[in-house]
Image (cartoon, rainbow, N blue to C red; front, side, top):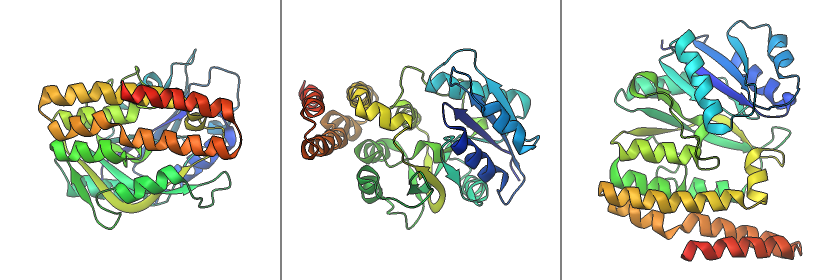
Length: 302
């Protein structure tokens, strides 16, 4: 069985970190190793949380200064590669939770698809208390996913990239990579919110194949304190996504990915998400935030 390597970047909230580590330790296979990379840039109890697990398969690293998403993820991957050389690697969120069959399902999908560079799974969206919750953006992703979570799908080429850019249905923390097919550093530190989508797009533009499986083996937590929520509230998320889609549209044209270039240039999902947030702010009478969102929306036409 292939050794599975987990990178767990930590930014805040030791309570959630403990839940993630317990879910890793509870996998129904012991063919895994993990490293927690503390990128909080502040005093905390993350190291104590790791040590309290009493599991030698879970390591701890602390960055002297906050490096940001891409660099932090790369640090963890370099550590795993140097010290354990796992066949499969993944970067999971410290505030999420794995089902006990996550490693097993991912390993099987990699074995069944030897030429695929990456595998991603389906997710159950949960709240702070680990209970299923409704999320409108995730609801849309679920329904635009080409496989409707009923069968596996192989995503590649222009059509595959166009479908990803149209719906962004790949949940980055569920993605695992075959180590032999990737080059380190893997993630582009230029991006924050778009770091995962940029990587998926880059791999597909390079002719790689990514496989999605319908197994709901990952619990994706939505809560107010995570980085996604913070960047969405400040509109920084949308500013970056707009810049990314405009850049990838140019890259797609250069590669001859005409469908993907057209989808990227339309910015449909970004516009819909902004409009959804505008409606939220309107019904809460938060006019200042609404006007900021509308100003960002206007940039999608430039």
